[in-house]
Image 1: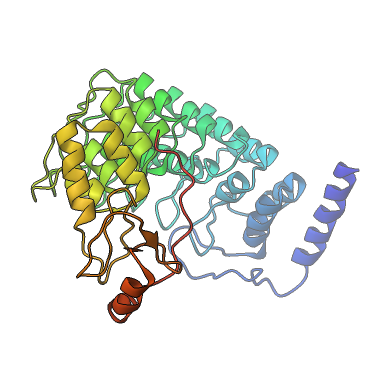
Image 2: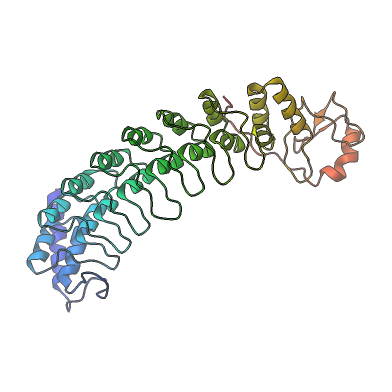
Length: 380
C-alpha cells in the first residue's frame, strides 16, 4: 500500500513538472552556487524533499544537476537528510552527490541530519566519509548542534567518527561541547564527552567552566556527572566576578547543587570580587528555604550571621519573607517578639496586636502583596 501511494505521488509529480513553460516550481533562479536552470532541477529538489526515488532518477535522466541548490543553498541531499528519507540519501550518495555541500549558512547535510530523532541518515553520511568538524558561519559543528539538541545517539555516533571533543564554537562565546552540554542540562551526554577526554577546564568568554554554568542553572545531575572527571577544579573562580560554582548555586537558590558541591569539598568560605560570601548571597534571597539551608549547613557563628541579616533586611520596596522565629513586631515603637501574628494578606510581616498593625498600615500598605506560591523543591 505504501509503495502504491509513492507510485501515485511520483506520477503526479511527473505530470505537474512536465507541464508549463519551463519555469521552476516557485524557486528563485538567481542565486549563488549551482543555480536552477530547468524545471528538472526544481523537480529533483522537490522529489528529494518528499522521498521519491523514482522521480529523482527521472529528473536526473532528463538532465537535472545533482548539485543544484535552492535559494538557501540546500541541495537534494540536504532535503533528503532533513526529512529522514534514507532511501533517497542512499541513492544520491551512490550517484556521487557532494556529501559536504554547504548551504548559505555553512550547514552541511551532516548538520541537518543531527536534528532528526532517527539517526539513519546520519549513519549513511558518516559511512560515506562526511567531514565531522566542518563549521557553519556561526562556528558550530555537527557535534555542537547534536549536543545543544540533547541528542545522545547522534552525539555518540559523531564522537565515534572522530569529532573534536574540545572544538570551540568560533563566535564571541567560544563554547566547548562539554560547556554546551552542561549549560543545557544534558547530564546523559556528559559521560560520553568525558570518556573521550573532554577538557573540563576550558572556559567561555566570562571565565565560566562547565561546572560553573551547571551550578548557576541548578542542574544538580550535571554537577554530579561532572565529578566523574578527576581533574575538576571545584573552587575555580569566574573571571568576571570571581565566583565559584558553589557561590553561584547559593546565589540563585539552587541548594541541591550547593549541597552536592559541599559534599565534594567545595570551599564554603569563598568570596567574590565584590566581597560577597555564602552568607550575603543566601540571605539576600530572604526565603524560608535559604534560611533553613543556612541553619542546617552553617556553624553556630554562621547561624548568628544569617539570623542578623535576615531580621534586619529592609521591608520597604522588597518582598522579604522573615521567619516568625526571628521576627519582631513591624511597628517601629513596639518591636516585641512574643505572641506575634502575621499580616493576613502578604504573610511577610508580623504584629503584636491589631492596634500595632492599624498604626503601621500607612507604611506597610505600600508593599503589602499576596505572596508567591511557595517552592515545592526540598532543600536537601
